[in-house]
Image (tube, rainbow, N blue to C red; front, side, top):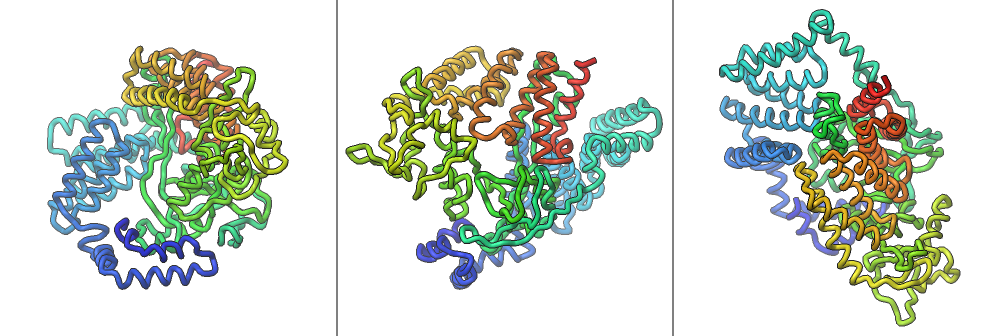
Amino acid sequence: MEKLKSLIPINLKQRIFESTSENLPSTCSSLIEFFLTLPEFQRVVRELSDPEMALCRKNVASALDSKQKGNECFSSGDFSKALSFYTQALRFAPMNVDDIDNKLVATIYVNRATSMHKLGLLEECIRDCNRAVGLFPHYAKAWYRRGKAYASLKKYEDAICDFNVALSMEGSLDGKSRIKDELEIMLNYCKRKGGTSSSCNKENEKDLCSRDRSYMTVEPHQIKLQCISTSAKGRGMSSPNNIDPASLVHSEEPFAALVILISQIKVNSMAIVHMKSLDAYGALGQSGKLSAIEDALISNVEQVRVGQAIYSKGSLFNHSCQPNIHTYFLSRTLFIRSTEFIPAGVPLELSYGPQVGQWDLRERQQLLEDQYSFKCQCSGCSQLNLSDIVIHAFQCVRPDCFGVVLNSSVVKHGKLDASCVHDFAAIDGLERALPVVKHEQDTIDKVAHLLLKQSDGLLRVGPGYCLTCGSYRDLESSFAATKKAVTNIKRLQATIISKKVSTILLSDALKSRDLLRSTMHAYSKDVAQAEDNLAEAFCLVGEFQLAMNHCTASIEILEKLYHKDHIVIGNELMKLASIQLSLHDLPAALSSINRLDAIFSLYYGSHAARLFPYLENLRREANKLAL
């Protein structure tokens, strides 16, 4: 696909880039006409449509090679990368009536299912096991792995059934012994619950329903949507009625799970992601302990990309760097929820990736232009944001001044004239002076007084000069000092992943944090990242008080870059609450849990508990401390 894109003439690329809603059909027609005369395009179409080739040429050796790479990643604990390699192996693996081929494909499906189980993607794990069983019904491992997934979902009756089938098919003594152990655990659990496996299962369903009704039913939504058109973005979506925060705006099954080049041109495809918490099915979920160091890992939430799909209505929602809706997935079902009050007629906009607070204006606009070929003019890019000023800025050299010093990467057009007169537009990368959000007015005035006081629209302070008092900081020496500090922080981050934090490295990271604190602005994201990494490192070595101090410091900065109810703050509060519980600080932990619960409910509604099982574990531990 990349090769095809590279063959498009520059003038045609320019026409596509400059397309409007009025001439888009003719532009697409020109592109299709160009491709139809291209031999490379005809070859790709044949490969896509040929049932023997599917998305790529079938090759057993390539499938085995990708499978082996997946096995290596799985053995090293990199389950996300293993999942990616197993998916690649499935593209190459031939699927014929031959039992040998079917066994290979079934094996890869089970390997991928095992990776998904490790990542907490239980429904997807079961789906791959179903595929393996369908291809090779006598494959004991497929039945066993599905039983394990059912057990993790507390569907014990289904788990017992699958374990029994696996036991009857397993040929090795070690395999039979392992399955018998799992089966005995399930049966004993049901006996302790007081009854048969069937009654155990009913009791479990009742418990699941009380915890999160979205397990049993789909949350209804009654938001009326309408397609609108705006001069800046073309077609989009809005509602003729006001929408309250946390309302379920839209849900949709995928229109197609495979995306080809023409589809990418005509509609927006969406990456299907699932939220992964290290402790959702890990140490805390199994042991319920927070006192021991091994069980006190602060929870890290990350997105795992599991596919790409087309959603017919979902593709109509436009982008904003300050989105008012949030997307998430349950299996392949798309859910869209409002994260603030949205007046009737206001466009409903989600984030294609970059957001205010995450990256500065220049970075956001560059990414959107590179990936989606448009220059963003959303509300976040059409106003002056505190985060765009401070996110990578240095602090003033005067200890009594809280002003920021812009580094050269913030200034888009680079050079200043001899009088250091610099157009306001060059600071923020747009062609006009920007309005300021009212609630940020005072804070921006504190850190960048001169930005708000230039009556003629020209900024007479360039890179290296404080935007509050005009003092000069040498950027070259500042960059050199911070580069080494950031490198040390990244080294610490690498050891956190391997859980091998050394005293020497931790000491170096603390010195680097202090250097960043004395050089970068107090609201710099580099400082926030350093504090966050130190929190995780101190948690790993059992220094929970220090971990809490650093975690709190990181949150205080992120609240300035984003806002207090942003999902990023919720993720950090999850870490903070687990540390506070490790310190047996019940009042502080309950405060953090209640706050993160409110944030997650805003972004995920009644599905929050299902997506983040760790939330329930936190509350359970808090209740134990309260007794």
